[in-house]
View 1 (cartoon, rainbow, N blue to C red):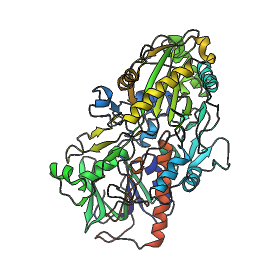
View 2: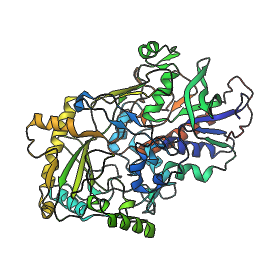
View 3: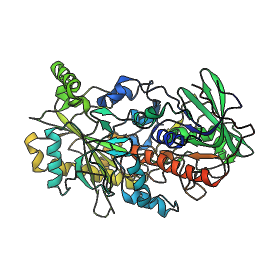
Length: 553
């Protein structure tokens, strides 16, 4: 059991993509005693590993925090489910498995904001270091890392036709979205190994669990960080039905994500003074930006009914289709059960004035009314399109000092008028692609939002009615140097020695694509920064005699 005389060098809170890689890198030095705390359980649920099993992981309290947003005025008063992984591997255990870095310009903008060391040329080696790419080493990819990247193992004629239609609309076909400019259309590369999900736990934790200097504890609910003379020295957490404190001799690193990390800071008395005082929490360090700057990708799901087309709708609604899917997957880990939720992607400009692609398509050979509901019985495909660089900003706040109380999540979707314009442009562009000759053999008919909606206001209303999240929250512990920034370019919390944040919450602006692998890169960067700092500064002892860490699980 933990006791006051057990001091870990580093305590990492959260075993998602960033926390997992950080635990791996820091514990590679046998002189570092590392403790990794995860609120969820082991990633031994079978549906985590079968790619299509995300349908049974999202919304499942075994693997998902099951958060909800506040009522969204921009979405006609709807509130949305807001899945976040609560299991070893974090959201990499329940996400769409798409390997995506974003655009070079995303990271160069971070650097231009005063965050030295975060430009594209700085982060590309970090992406490559983690990567185990199917095509081997190259100028853009690495093959000696742990993060497996493969081509998808199954395709559909309807998706090939959409790619051809995109080409006829001036959107070139591409084979790799990860070279810094992702404009074009093609099949996504995925984090899978031979048709099985490859999550951060498999990649970075399982191979090193026997390291004597690494302790990994699951089902640990971290409440707050404790300060000693203004320095972060301990975390308070509930584990095995009792409250415990865990002591860090060097640093505490929050990797609990864009929802979890600001919540821990706020309960610790680090955050906006008005919020903390309203909840009766003593303000230990005022940081007004904690929980602010929430950004997310809102998708518009356009559905088109088809004729003469094979889609997952028919396969999944047939007994023999289900049997066939199971047999195929059992035989060679292929077929529909090996599918990522979205197989085909496209990156395009909503209008010619955009500096780079600002729309992302996730094209799926299936359709349903709402996520979690059964597939339609008629053949159809879905072209989901999202604004990659939304201007709307929201917030995440705790509701009380009790860590069991669900947080207030307000993405504030479509609150900026420019986001409405991009949404309307996206619907019109999608219709133009679908009207191309390559798709006409399937006689596509717009089912959602409806072809009769044509005016600008009608398209704004349609976006508000069909818009939903693709689960990419970022920015709530923003990196920067201004008064609203939470961490500096070394990911150190402003004004709180011994404390860093390393997850998607530190992004000043959202990346132009899926956020899992950029978050993993942030973990790599954090490890690089911490290891460099450990060579330059003496270790801090938090009021106790430092001893070798003793595993507590």
